[in-house]
Length: 588
DNA sequence: GCCGTTTTCGGCCCGACTGTTTTCAGTCG
Image (cartoon, rainbow, N blue to C red; front, side, top):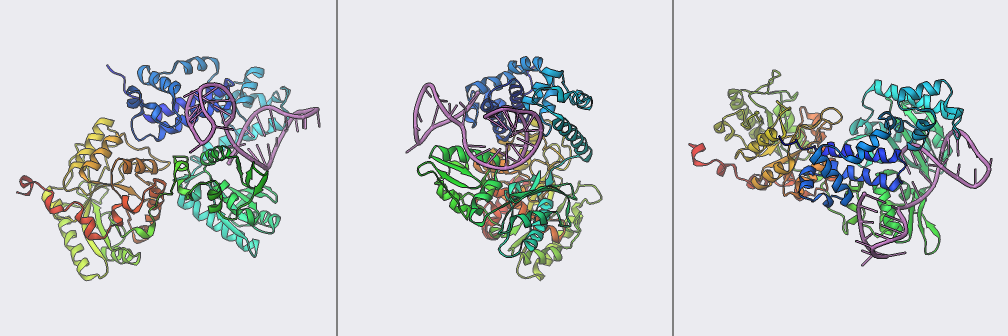
């Protein structure tokens, strides 16, 4: 019986673990980083890396060379990597957990293991409480206290659950804090959210704020006076660190206005983008930091007030923050055109009170028109949705009439009668084709039976993609950020089918979903798929969720041409005329 | 362990902070 292929996530985890073990073993840092970089590459790969390994093509992934190819292949063929087995015998598994503690790394973890036999978090706590850590040369009482504090924090965060904050909540807090600081900082003070917030990531670990002011010490102190802040850690003229009442860590960095460009570039990151950027700069004799760019040619450090100047000085096009993830952006000669909210002409996935929405057709239509849209598809759930929100075929016929009536009576926007149809486990849809043919827009989504095998789920999805009356696939992977993993799906096969049939894949803009993800949406576009960005609004207020979908699309390097709902309605509907889709047999 | 407008070996970002040091190692972002 052939062994099931390890998923990309499993391969990435194995490489990450091997990196951790090599680190404990005292390998040079660059070797360890190579494993972590390869793990990231594998995790983000849009195709099956196990498959790539068997074809001898893993070295096409950035950061994977001949050695790592062999190791991945061993994992695929035998289920384990010999080097990892050997190191696991050498270091108890609890050591890796110790290296994750704040203030502890591989060197100290190994030192404690060798000197005191500390091999787990429990053993570490016991040793610290017995004051045995301070007996080790190079460590003292303060270190011991720090370890106990780290252990306490770890316990607390495990109690509180997932520490990452979804982007909308984090941005709201960041903007509130920035406003408060600007008021306190006075004339000329600028405060800008940076870090993963500014890169519009799915979720963030902490709130990074960059400020420039002529009174740095005053501004740093004023952070602690904001009502959202629970306590301040350190505060000097270079910045302050604090914790908000929500539990979010806040990091404020303060600099001189002349350095705003350098400061912003540095603290927007990502860490990997910055590291790669600096390595590239060093090859040109330039050294990049948050203070400026040092030129070997004259030994002078030049500050830049704008971020554009920083990138220009490095011979790079200006890279929007969403691109800065070390995914090849530093090789660009020209920056790609990224889709913007203003490019969106309509929303093609929305709900009303006919299913589980909270607004009427007219309310949704008026709100969409106020957003400047030219069209809106009303796509309530379908016959088997359940939760008391199912729409029977008879009810759908009534709904179609209502949408058509609303369309006739409301000026300035075109309403498309549609449906978000369930894809049943066998790949069929839960309305008859005759009824689907009466709709102007059909989104097909998986809402049940998530736990299918990859092969079965992929066949299910492709059947829906190939259905002639399906316009788009809603939230294609079913993930919920920080809550639910995507269901098993061979995305390369899904993308091939979507590209072949012209069926759109959605970037669902609900901030809990953002599905397809940035990485997957980019892979889809590269495979020739056209995407559609939809709010999936369930009330008028959540039509505004479109911005999170735009954020994801920009992180996926998508331009207006990759996104179907940047098209005028006639062109959108002309892509694949519905009238021509059903064969004679189905049309009867 | 990877990788190449200083190519197949010798490099591989930058600065701050902390605690324990008497000049620095380890960790972090």
